[in-house]
Image 1 (cartoon, rainbow, N blue to C red):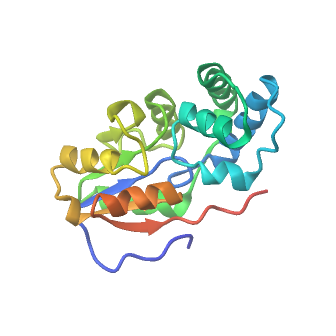
Image 2: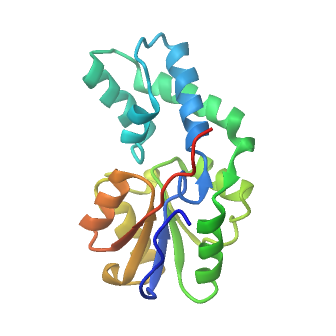
Length: 198
């Protein structure tokens, strides 16, 4: 099991997508490496550096890298390349079985939603590929809010659209930024540990 079992039932269940429902973080990392190389970035974009930005929008990640390493990468151009590379690798994405099984089980009796820092088109396609497109009537993405994670906006919007009080929601997340967003939203959270790399 890659997460601690729940100690109680909740009124609403909110799931991150990448690294939580879908084992897609390795694919995202590969796409970033390709995009950064294409744009001449000389940094070593390690797995640790990549995961420290998990949950952030693509342009925000580029802006953060520029600030951290004194680069002048074009956020829009690098984002476009990363998106293109990711979509090329996307068919290789697999579901994270334990989390998907839980999501399917609770969706039979309780409201469920996805709240992802990714872009709607990619999140929707990922859910289709792992067989969950029909499971989640509520899907919140970066386009739906002004402030992404670690701000609580995505999770609060998900709770509102599910019709559940934030205090009665639980969030499943693999990223520190997502766990912080859940805390700020006044929600319980469960850390999903990433499947082993390689």
